[in-house]
Image 1 (cartoon, protein in one colour):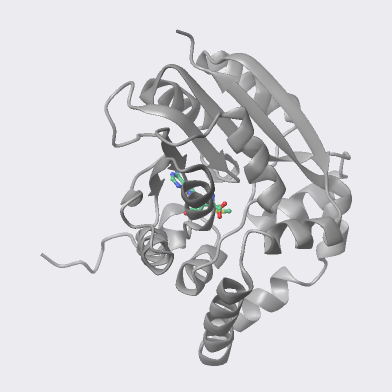
Image 2: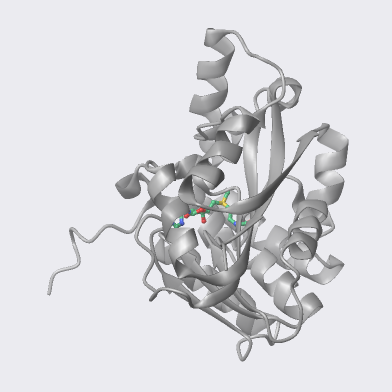
Length: 265
Ligand SMILES: C[S@@+](CC[C@H](N)C(=O)[O-])C[C@H]1O[C@@H](n2cnc3c(N)ncnc32)[C@H](O)[C@@H]1O
């Protein structure tokens, strides 16, 4: 069978081009970094024996952190084949392949039967999902009754002008929402006991939280891959230049919300 027309790259799914670079590099991020992951883990009561679904697992760094630090079993799904390959490589490199598995899957149509997971964590993903309400209903469906959900979502913390809003959405590829929109999406899907924590961001705190998810050894490993890609790939170089053109301004408007809830018993 010809694979010529098989969708593989981020653009084929309407996703930002930088995801292809991140998949090659083996590094994805979510807002709030380690601090956000630890908070969601607490909300979701992760512990040895917990069966966790990590939706939009990206390069698998957060999934590996949760498996290693909370002893849970993790199934990660991502819509991009490059991310699944990258996350699988990451789990092998961290000697966690017995505890974690990654598969292709779309948040809007999860490849699982009903009532499978004790917890579901999804970090900086739903901003990229076209039908957010459908994704939330899928999260409810695959959780066991009483199962916990934890989301990290990009929010507006200060209202931008329409022009600034358009620039930020275009540059980041993220459909940011007011915090109440994410909260209502969870409630409308049927989650109960919904709690919300809104966070503003500073460049410095964000840098600290992002690097805290990596050991020095892993940081060097990813940096090495990044340098290799920057040297060899002109498309990536121009993408990086564009993305780093004015990040400070974004932090005035962009923040993140942490959301938790339960599927009713
Ligand atoms: C910003 S990255 C975050 C990755 C990861 N959660 C992390 O914290 O590093 C967003 C991820 O969501 C994935 N994604 C986007 N839309 C998706 C969808 N409809 N279903 C599953 N994954 C999706 C992307 O491929 C990407 O890996």
